[in-house]
Length: 198
Ligand SMILES: [Zn+2]
Image 1 (cartoon, rainbow, N blue to C red):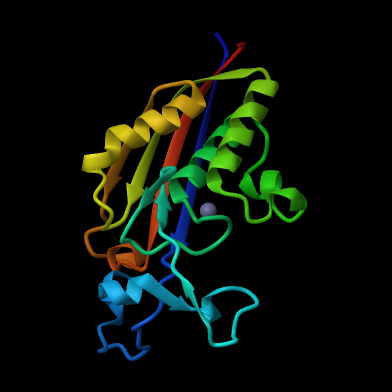
Image 2: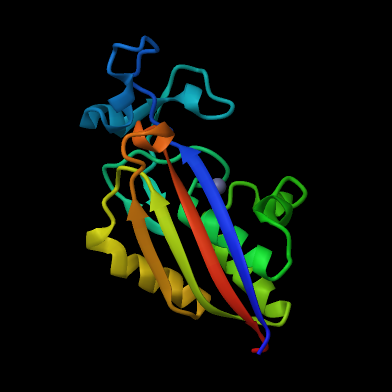
Protein backbone atom coordinates (compact mmCIF):
# COMPACT_ATOMS: atom_id res chain seq x y z
CA UNK A 1 0.00 0.00 0.00
CA UNK A 2 1.40 3.36 -1.02
CA UNK A 3 1.19 5.95 1.76
CA UNK A 4 1.93 9.67 1.75
CA UNK A 5 2.38 11.89 4.79
CA UNK A 6 1.95 15.66 4.82
CA UNK A 7 2.39 18.40 7.40
CA UNK A 8 1.12 21.95 7.64
CA UNK A 9 1.53 24.98 9.86
CA UNK A 10 -0.39 28.24 10.08
CA UNK A 11 -0.61 31.26 12.36
CA UNK A 12 -2.78 34.38 12.44
CA UNK A 13 -3.11 37.33 14.79
CA UNK A 14 -6.34 38.35 16.48
CA UNK A 15 -8.05 41.16 14.60
CA UNK A 16 -9.54 42.98 17.57
CA UNK A 17 -7.50 46.08 18.28
CA UNK A 18 -9.89 48.38 20.08
CA UNK A 19 -8.91 49.39 23.62
CA UNK A 20 -5.31 48.74 22.79
CA UNK A 21 -2.60 51.19 23.63
CA UNK A 22 0.88 50.83 22.16
CA UNK A 23 2.58 51.65 25.47
CA UNK A 24 3.94 48.51 27.10
CA UNK A 25 2.31 49.16 30.47
CA UNK A 26 -1.18 49.75 29.15
CA UNK A 27 -2.36 46.19 29.42
CA UNK A 28 -2.46 45.85 25.65
CA UNK A 29 -1.30 42.28 26.01
CA UNK A 30 -4.69 41.30 27.25
CA UNK A 31 -6.49 43.50 24.74
CA UNK A 32 -7.74 40.70 22.48
CA UNK A 33 -9.65 39.37 25.47
CA UNK A 34 -10.73 42.78 26.74
CA UNK A 35 -14.21 43.97 27.67
CA UNK A 36 -17.23 42.61 25.87
CA UNK A 37 -17.97 45.99 24.36
CA UNK A 38 -14.54 46.12 22.77
CA UNK A 39 -15.23 42.80 21.12
CA UNK A 40 -18.61 43.80 19.79
CA UNK A 41 -17.35 46.48 17.47
CA UNK A 42 -14.23 47.58 15.80
CA UNK A 43 -13.22 50.52 13.68
CA UNK A 44 -13.28 50.37 9.94
CA UNK A 45 -9.52 50.97 9.92
CA UNK A 46 -9.23 47.23 10.46
CA UNK A 47 -10.82 46.56 7.11
CA UNK A 48 -9.32 47.23 3.71
CA UNK A 49 -10.85 50.30 2.17
CA UNK A 50 -12.20 51.58 5.50
CA UNK A 51 -11.35 54.84 7.16
CA UNK A 52 -14.61 56.77 6.93
CA UNK A 53 -14.96 56.58 10.70
CA UNK A 54 -17.90 54.18 10.64
CA UNK A 55 -18.01 51.22 13.02
CA UNK A 56 -18.50 47.82 11.46
CA UNK A 57 -19.76 44.80 13.37
CA UNK A 58 -17.06 42.48 14.59
CA UNK A 59 -17.00 39.07 13.07
CA UNK A 60 -16.77 36.09 15.37
CA UNK A 61 -13.76 33.85 15.75
CA UNK A 62 -13.93 30.99 13.29
CA UNK A 63 -11.76 28.04 14.23
CA UNK A 64 -11.88 24.43 13.14
CA UNK A 65 -14.85 25.29 10.90
CA UNK A 66 -16.84 26.36 13.99
CA UNK A 67 -18.04 29.79 15.12
CA UNK A 68 -16.93 30.88 18.60
CA UNK A 69 -19.32 33.62 19.75
CA UNK A 70 -17.79 36.18 22.08
CA UNK A 71 -14.23 35.64 20.90
CA UNK A 72 -12.50 38.02 18.49
CA UNK A 73 -11.80 36.81 14.96
CA UNK A 74 -8.40 36.09 13.52
CA UNK A 75 -7.05 38.46 10.92
CA UNK A 76 -5.61 37.55 7.57
CA UNK A 77 -6.33 35.66 4.43
CA UNK A 78 -9.91 34.34 4.36
CA UNK A 79 -11.39 33.98 7.87
CA UNK A 80 -8.00 33.20 9.45
CA UNK A 81 -9.03 29.69 10.53
CA UNK A 82 -5.56 28.36 11.42
CA UNK A 83 -6.82 24.82 11.93
CA UNK A 84 -8.42 24.63 8.48
CA UNK A 85 -5.44 26.33 6.83
CA UNK A 86 -2.88 24.01 8.46
CA UNK A 87 -4.95 21.04 7.29
CA UNK A 88 -5.11 22.38 3.74
CA UNK A 89 -1.31 22.65 3.71
CA UNK A 90 -0.87 19.14 5.13
CA UNK A 91 -3.28 17.57 2.62
CA UNK A 92 -1.84 19.48 -0.31
CA UNK A 93 1.73 18.59 0.67
CA UNK A 94 0.94 14.90 1.03
CA UNK A 95 -0.64 14.82 -2.44
CA UNK A 96 2.17 16.93 -3.90
CA UNK A 97 -0.25 19.72 -4.85
CA UNK A 98 1.75 22.65 -3.49
CA UNK A 99 0.53 24.77 -0.60
CA UNK A 100 -2.43 26.97 0.31
CA UNK A 101 -0.89 30.02 -1.35
CA UNK A 102 -0.40 28.15 -4.58
CA UNK A 103 -3.87 26.61 -4.49
CA UNK A 104 -5.91 29.64 -3.43
CA UNK A 105 -3.61 32.66 -3.66
CA UNK A 106 -3.74 35.70 -5.87
CA UNK A 107 -3.47 33.53 -8.96
CA UNK A 108 -6.98 32.22 -8.22
CA UNK A 109 -9.11 35.38 -7.82
CA UNK A 110 -12.30 33.29 -7.67
CA UNK A 111 -11.25 32.28 -4.13
CA UNK A 112 -10.57 35.81 -2.86
CA UNK A 113 -12.27 36.21 0.51
CA UNK A 114 -13.65 32.67 0.47
CA UNK A 115 -14.30 30.96 3.80
CA UNK A 116 -11.89 28.28 4.96
CA UNK A 117 -14.54 25.61 4.61
CA UNK A 118 -14.38 26.24 0.85
CA UNK A 119 -10.59 25.87 0.84
CA UNK A 120 -10.78 22.60 2.73
CA UNK A 121 -13.54 21.19 0.55
CA UNK A 122 -11.68 22.13 -2.63
CA UNK A 123 -8.44 20.65 -1.30
CA UNK A 124 -10.07 17.34 -0.37
CA UNK A 125 -11.54 17.24 -3.87
CA UNK A 126 -8.13 17.89 -5.42
CA UNK A 127 -6.55 15.18 -3.25
CA UNK A 128 -9.14 12.66 -4.47
CA UNK A 129 -8.70 13.87 -8.02
CA UNK A 130 -4.98 13.14 -7.65
CA UNK A 131 -5.88 9.55 -6.76
CA UNK A 132 -5.57 9.59 -2.96
CA UNK A 133 -7.80 8.78 0.00
CA UNK A 134 -7.33 10.41 3.39
CA UNK A 135 -6.44 7.79 6.02
CA UNK A 136 -6.44 10.12 9.03
CA UNK A 137 -5.38 13.59 10.16
CA UNK A 138 -4.36 15.29 13.38
CA UNK A 139 -4.31 18.98 14.23
CA UNK A 140 -2.76 20.69 17.24
CA UNK A 141 -3.86 24.18 18.19
CA UNK A 142 -1.31 26.36 19.99
CA UNK A 143 -2.78 29.19 22.04
CA UNK A 144 -4.43 30.19 25.29
CA UNK A 145 -8.02 30.33 24.09
CA UNK A 146 -10.48 29.07 23.14
CA UNK A 147 -10.54 26.00 25.31
CA UNK A 148 -11.37 23.19 22.92
CA UNK A 149 -12.49 20.52 25.35
CA UNK A 150 -16.22 21.23 25.27
CA UNK A 151 -16.37 21.35 21.46
CA UNK A 152 -13.59 18.97 20.52
CA UNK A 153 -15.91 16.20 19.34
CA UNK A 154 -18.06 18.61 17.36
CA UNK A 155 -14.95 19.94 15.63
CA UNK A 156 -13.47 16.50 14.99
CA UNK A 157 -16.77 15.24 13.58
CA UNK A 158 -17.21 18.25 11.29
CA UNK A 159 -13.72 18.14 9.83
CA UNK A 160 -13.71 14.34 9.74
CA UNK A 161 -16.91 14.33 7.71
CA UNK A 162 -15.32 16.63 5.17
CA UNK A 163 -12.13 14.55 4.96
CA UNK A 164 -13.97 11.24 5.03
CA UNK A 165 -11.51 10.05 7.67
CA UNK A 166 -10.90 10.18 11.44
CA UNK A 167 -9.56 13.52 12.67
CA UNK A 168 -8.01 14.24 16.07
CA UNK A 169 -7.83 17.79 17.38
CA UNK A 170 -5.62 18.61 20.35
CA UNK A 171 -4.51 21.85 21.96
CA UNK A 172 -1.57 23.13 23.92
CA UNK A 173 -0.19 26.44 25.17
CA UNK A 174 3.31 27.84 24.81
CA UNK A 175 3.63 28.42 28.56
CA UNK A 176 3.18 32.18 28.23
CA UNK A 177 5.98 32.52 25.68
CA UNK A 178 5.81 34.11 22.23
CA UNK A 179 2.82 35.51 20.36
CA UNK A 180 0.50 32.66 21.33
CA UNK A 181 1.53 32.94 24.96
CA UNK A 182 0.79 36.68 24.97
CA UNK A 183 -2.63 36.03 23.43
CA UNK A 184 -1.77 37.94 20.25
CA UNK A 185 -2.82 35.13 17.96
CA UNK A 186 -3.18 31.41 17.38
CA UNK A 187 -1.09 28.81 15.57
CA UNK A 188 -1.85 25.29 14.40
CA UNK A 189 0.11 22.28 13.22
CA UNK A 190 -1.46 19.55 11.11
CA UNK A 191 -0.35 16.13 9.90
CA UNK A 192 -2.26 13.90 7.54
CA UNK A 193 -1.81 10.49 6.00
CA UNK A 194 -3.01 9.59 2.51
CA UNK A 195 -3.08 6.29 0.68
CA UNK A 196 -3.02 5.83 -3.04
CA UNK A 197 -6.34 4.65 -4.45
CA UNK A 198 -9.96 5.44 -3.76
ZN1 LIG B 1 -3.94 30.97 7.31
